[in-house]
Length: 617
Image (tube, rainbow, N blue to C red; front, top):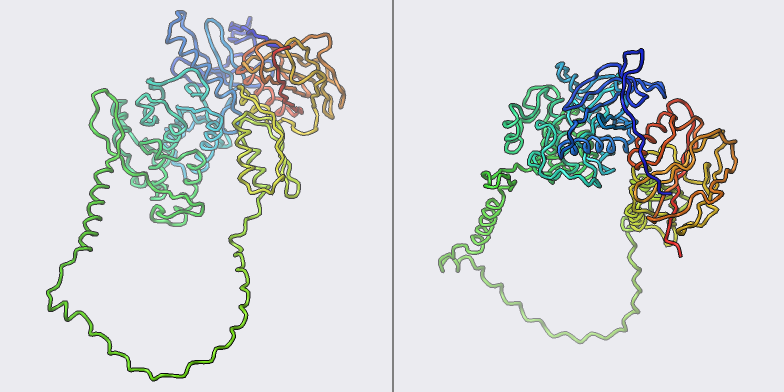
C-alpha cells in the first residue's frame, strides 16, 4: 500500500522515418524556440494523437552541484505548472528524464508570444491592454493562491492563442512554498523584469510577480521597457531610480490614473505594492474606466470599495553599505521631526501671545452690568400635589443599527473557493451545511467564515475530513470533475476506517449512470502513489464493484491520512500502465489525462476519500 518505483524512458531515432522519438511516444517535428540550455520542439503525441510542445534539456555527462541544481529546477518547473489547471496557464501534460535528457510535455500554443507582438512594433489599444493584463493577473492570482511564484514573468513567457487568449508559460524557475530548494542569495530571472529584492538575491514572494507584471504593463502602454541599458545599468536603475511615468511618453494609452497604478505595482518596497494580483487588476480596471471617462488626475479619495489608488511614497536609498547590500530606508524621519517641531512651535506661539499694556487691558474689559432692582415680597404660593410621572417610552432602535441578515449565498460562494479543498456547501432557508475534505488550515478558515457571518445558533453545520499532506495539487487536478454528494462514483469502505496496521483494505465502488472504466490510485501522506486498479473493461452503469478480497492490500507504516482517488471515465485514462511514482509526477499525468478525456467528448468523474491508517494493537 506504499509502493514506489519509476518508469524509465529514452529518446531514439524512429526506424525508417528520420524523426527523433522521445520516450517511445513523442515525435519531434520542428523547433519552436531556444532558451538557456533548453530547446522547445513541436512534437506529436502518438498515443493520444495530438500536437504538443516538448521542452527538452540535455543533461551534462558530469554530475556536479550545478548540474544537480539545474535538474532540480527543471523538475520544479514541471511540478509547479503540472499542479496548475487554469485557462491562462499553459498546461503541462507529462514529464520524463533519463541519464542524457529531461523533458516537459506542454500544451501547444500557436499564436506566438507577447514579446513577438511588441517586438513587431504593435501599438496595443487600451481595451486590449486591459484584457491581456486581466488574464495575466487572473493566472498569477490562481498560481499564487496555490503557493507557486513564477519569478520570471516577461513578454517572452506570455503566450497568445490565435483567438487572443493569454497563457503564462515556463515555470522553470518557479518557487513552490513547500519546496525544499531555496534560492536565497541566488539571482535568477531576467533583470529588466526583476524586482529589487530579487536582484539582491533575497527570498521573494508573490509581490515579485506583481512587480514584473507592472513592467509588462509599462511596456504595453509605451512600447518601451521602463529601464534600459546593459545589465549593470538596469540593475542600478531598478534599485535606485523611478521610471518615467507612462503618460509622459506621449502615447494615447497614458493617463495620470494609469500612472498611479504602474507606480504602485513597481514600488521599490514589496509592502508598498499591491497585496495581490486581484487588487492590481481591480485598480487597473478602475484607472482605465477613469481614463476613458476623461479623468485628469489620479484619485486621492477612496473609491466605492474603499481602496485609494495613488502612487506609493518615493523612497530614497542611502549610500552603498560596506557589505554590498542596499538598504531601502525611507527619508521620512527628519520630515516628521521638522513637522512636529513646526506644529509644536505654532502651539507654543498660540499659547504665549504678547500681553497688552495695562491701559489696553482696562479698555478691553467691559463694564459690569447694573445691579438688578429689588423685588417686592410676594405671598407664598399654595403647594399643589404633583401629577404622577408618565413612564417614558423606550427609544426606538434605528434600522441602521439592527444586525443585517447574513447573505448565505455569498457565504457559500466564498467557502467553495477555499483553496486545497473539495467542499460541498448546501443552503436551506437560513441554515448552511458544509461537508467534504480539506487541509487543516482550510478547515479553520471555513470555521472562521461561519463564526463571523452572524448566523443564528445551530444554523451552521460543519462535517469536514481534514489532512496535513501534499494533496493540494491533486485536488486541483480533479476539481473540474469531482463529485461531492451522493452522486456516483461512490466509494464505501467494507473495512474499518481508520485502518489499523496489518488490517486489509476492502471497499466497493458504485459506478455512474454510464459505462465506466475505473482507475483507483492510493496516495500516501508521504507523497507516494500506487495504482490499485487500472482501467480494464467498462463496468455496467450503477453497478457495485468490490475490491480488496484476499487481503491484497494491508495497512503498513508510515501511517497517517492517506487518500484514495477513484476515477471513472468512458475511455481509458492512461494509455500505459503506471507503476509506483511520486505524487508530483502523478499530478502532472492526471491533469493532462482528465483534460484530454473532457476535450475528446468523453465523460469523467472523480471521487476522493481519505483513509486514515493507524498503528496496529
